[in-house]
Length: 137
Image: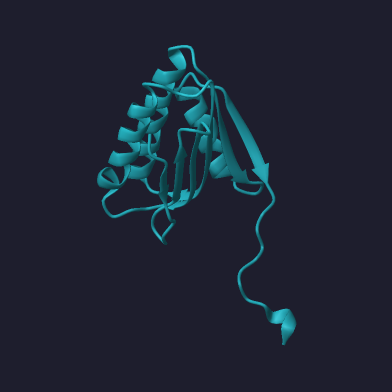
């Protein structure tokens, strides 16, 4: 099965789906203009992966911001993954959020309550790197 890697843009997350490693990863912003079209190949990949998944699958999600349509598409991803889990395959969702982002923590908790997949809610330090390197002046 082909590894899927999509580079992040200003509107779409980095996607790394690696069947060999049992790794599914989304990182970045998810505000694509055509959400259904963006997520369709991801859904198809997960459906194919479900035919022969690894013994253990890790799903890493660190979507710093997403719109309503992306929220639905992410839930659809989780529902497909849940189907694989219900067939007896072990997995964990690692939901990352910045420590001061209560909304993203709550989103993770909401997803956790909607699907029967083990979740880890993981707080990460706030990245204060705003690319303004004023210290060098």
